[in-house]
Length: 190
Ligand code: AMP
Image (cartoon, rainbow, N blue to C red; front, top):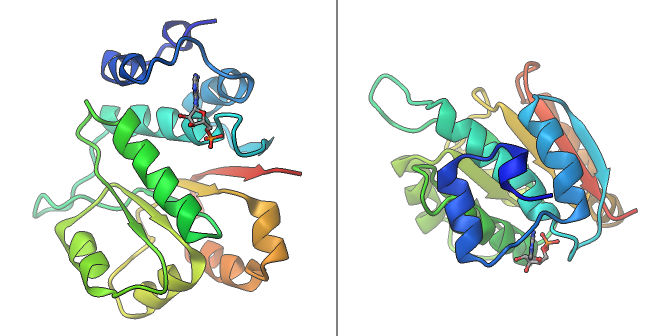
């Protein structure tokens, strides 16, 4: 199995070649076609199995094919990735940047424990993909910096750790604000 056989677009194939990825991992071979078909996915995958690319690649491909801007030309947040820790959030954001290097898709990452101002400025400039930890996401939503009205893709990463860390009430509050019509991708190690 090659990435080309997964029907990925050249701009993404080129980025994967830069990373020296020869073939998809098991989770990528299974999840990428399902996500591209528009299906919801519930997958059991540990960190280190390539699960970040399993959701980032098909989302980047979809977003490249359909641009989402408001009437002023500003990007709408159409993808939300929620993950329990700052470290994971940064890794996921870096992965979107790497795999999306030759696309026109922008991402940003928000997490707690740091100054909010740069995060607010990035949101004001506009992004397609938002990677967030739950507390800071709810905080900036409450302040009016983030609307989830345009979300098409919702990814919950490390769902089991969310449970362990007591984030379930926060995640429920986030899900309540998402549009009904969306694709949901849940990843859990167990
Ligand atoms: P993850 O499970 O998403 O944390 O990914 C674990 C590591 O595997 C990361 O360092 C990725 O860069 C790498 N990786 C992901 N997919 C592939 C692939 N298809 N071939 C080689 N390395 C990969």
